[in-house]
Length: 97
Image 1: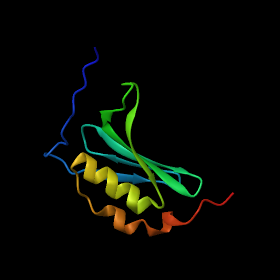
Image 2: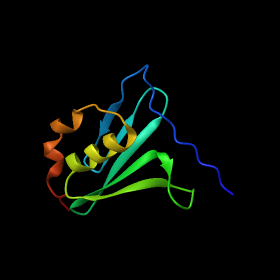
Image 3: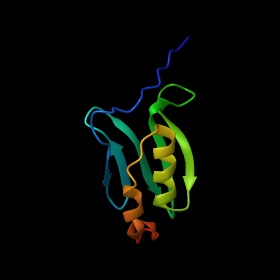
Image 4: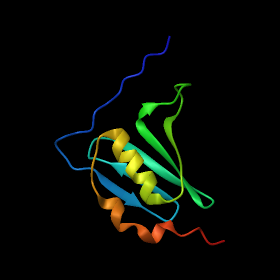
């Protein structure tokens, strides 16, 4: 039987969003907390502190219409609040091909 441990975010250092047009990752000085990946005109959000049901990947939080909603879901799931997502409105536009 697999054993899973839920980690809590570090309280010693602030978490930071690392942002590109295709991927946004949330991390503190100790670990990767979560990420959002652009999929067409939507964003998939993942909690990196929890394993998925198979135990070999990250917990998927869902598919979101924009990066702001995805970041909010990640912060809510991980218990981290940066409010930096509010500055990423430019990432809400669909990817150009």
